[in-house]
Amino acid sequence: MLSKITVLLTFTGLAAHSLAEPLPSAPLERRCWLSHTQQRTAVDLRDPTTVSFVNLANGYAVRSPFWVEFGVRGMGVVPAGNKNEKAGHHHLLIDTPLPINHQAQIPFSDTHKHFGKGQTGTQLDLPDGKHTLRLLFADHEHRPYFVYSREITVHVIGRRSSAPPRVEAGNFEESCALWYQDTISAPRAGGKEVYVKNLRDEEPVNSPFALSFGTVGYGIAPLAQKVKDTGHFAFTISSKGGGPVQRQVLSDGRTEALIDLPRGDYEIDLRLQDADGNPLLRAAPLRFTVQRQDR
Image (tube, rainbow, N blue to C red; front, side, top):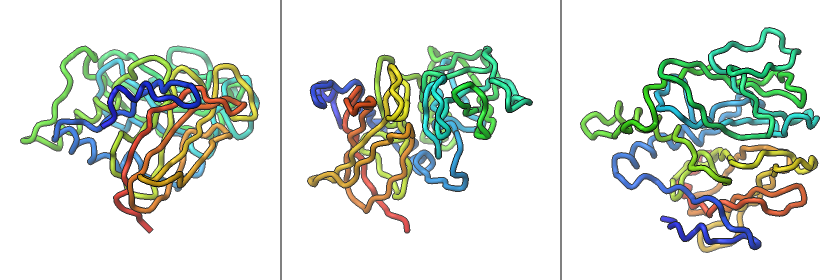
């Protein structure tokens, strides 16, 4: 496992601001987490352009406050006010339907949350009970694209300060579901960071698989658009004991990547860099194993 010493690793003089999150150490929790790996990393090409919740699904039970991860495929992210026909920014609709007039600007309200700085996620604090959530992608003027997620319902079952669910051997399936939903929605630790949303250190995956990237403290913008306090993702995947096998620069503001690798052990070096290619943040190296390649 990576230790906290990894925070001292540097990339062209820039300290890594986040740690590669390890797999759970408790055997039952690890078994539970790994039972959801395929779900988190699944490749779905049925709709070339879509937005989705990376870490939440319909019916999840969560403690509040909780973290919400935004995903977008087929388009990039760019802060509001910056015109780009192939990019936009996220909006979160809470307990409210889609706008009737899709040509009108999305209003600013407690039920229409705007993420016009190019954010890739947010922390929500909602009262106990059932709530509906939906992501809506929009242009530089906050006018919706025809790109929105399915509406999901989450059940807030208490405060984050209350005792967390536990995985129980005698009731594994039910207790695993509650523990996983609580764990995957846990708030970020705080501070600026860049991270892989859907994979933990030393986690095995089947290939091809999808990787989703997030950042806190910075927004996302395409390389061609210089916007203050934003960057774009870039990563290098290296094989164990070998050199780089894949490099990608998501210069168009994308926050997801499709990966296809043969069986083996790998390490991903993820970074957020500015419009001039200078690194803003670097994640601690994250190791993973491709255990099967599907053809």
